[in-house]
Length: 433
Image (tube, rainbow, N blue to C red; front, side):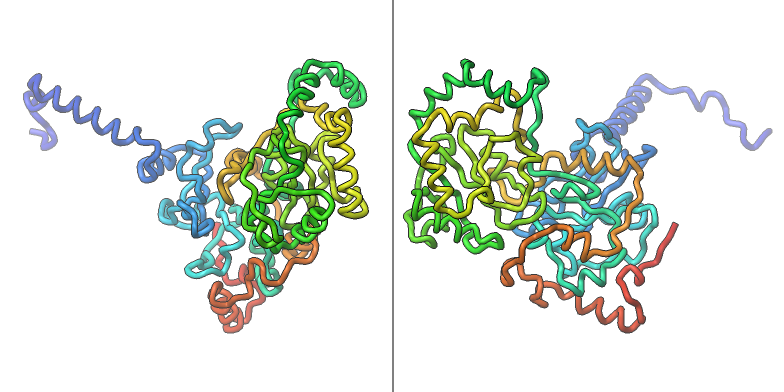
């Protein structure tokens, strides 16, 4: 008899056994394919799909946050469900894939570079994206010191920030034309606006305004010196200040933080850098208030004309105060700043109730970029990250990266570079296919 012959009766199963096998199969099915929030389960499922871009949070986010490991966003693929490309997967698990060079992209938060326990990967692939990310301007908590800029030559091949010249662009907000925009010239829209029901409604709402100008300020010594400008402006035009900066400027902190009840809102940035317009500006643009901006962005490229007031258009705080008073005294002129609202919508991509939160465009922008398959290289980090940011000088003690005890990795890599006679940190890595 053939040694591999099995009698037919061995395959005969009772109804009870068949039911048990079916239940077991069903249980295994749900174990494998359910639980989208589970990192281990989802990781196994994703690994079985072709063309998935695995993205690793290589460094942590801000340490005082609820979930610094996954940047307060989370892990998995759920955040890509409404994106043009959905074949991406985010994880903080460095052991999810067999090797670190198997990930499509590694995310590095600039503030955490060379921090404790942040080791540079020993191996990397030429196909990987090493992504340098920050929502802060280069003169603030995104800056690197000269040694770091030089040592990281050719280390990154992708930049990801609010700057329009980044490889991946993720702004704090956007102002988009509505689909029902009639396509008229600005002057025609402005003329149409003053005869509209919307204009009449706003005119009635003017009576609800109880304050002149509002500033919400908790950081009182900034790179932009906004506190100095506000102190001078307040001498000529009373400003309600809410937050720690009220006491610093010798004022009692206000209580009414309803932006819409003020004529003006001071959207003053902590730094003057190219393209840096934070959530302050977009929050104000959604309200019935005129934003006054102080910053380095080209606001005319992100907002409709005559929708905000830029301090750079006035010779001094005194001259600005005179214009503000004129607008309050002349309601028709004040209301002209809202002509655009029926034709545009404001997208707040950052939740203003949270601190340092990622923009809502973060996942889709990231996944779209990885699917484009573009090639880039950050060779001169000093130029790309600092010089091209066009920031004014920073104050030396703010976000101070020069404290060696905060960044012990610098000394360690200085030593390795000396011992191995290498110029750059990328030279310490092994390139694999």
